[in-house]
Amino acid sequence: MRSNRTGTGFAAGFIGAFVLMAIMFVMQALKLSGPPGFVGIYRSVFGSGASLDYVMASILFAISGGIWGAIYAALVKQPTPLNGALFGFLPTLWLWLAVAPMTGKPLFNGFTPTGLILPILFNVVIWGTFVGWYCSRKTNRRVIA
Image 1: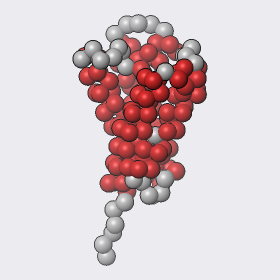
Image 2 (image 1 turned 90 degrees about the horizontal axis):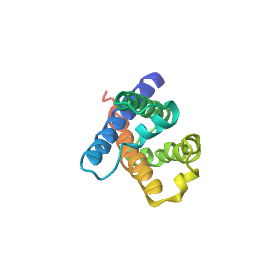
Image 3 (image 1 turned 135 degrees about the vertical axis):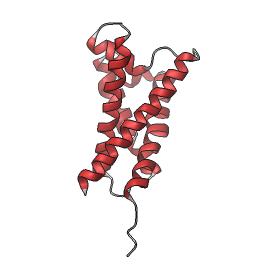
Image 4 (image 1 turned 90 degrees about the vertical axis):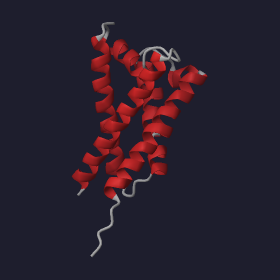
């Protein structure tokens, strides 16, 4: 039963990451932002600057979303959009406390408004609530005898 839940969580996180990618690419196309943050992170870690960076960064971002979703499903017995959103603070903290310094940025992205608000919007409000909703729809089914 647990492997089914973690598989569902992985799928939820993976799909949620694609939702975020779509939003970030639309924002870039509308010139509301530059390249998505995950592309910048990929380039900071692996170097380069080629178009293939977008593909590789997207694949790794989706897998990362799936891994976080699997962790959520493994830890949370009764998934809901609310506890999914609350769980979304964990990848946000990971970004602020581990990824940012690893890529040469200050902790909490230097406390800039964009560096604080966008991770909360993307990881908590959008990704987290989606993961909680998706997992609740797939795992909270009642068996009628």
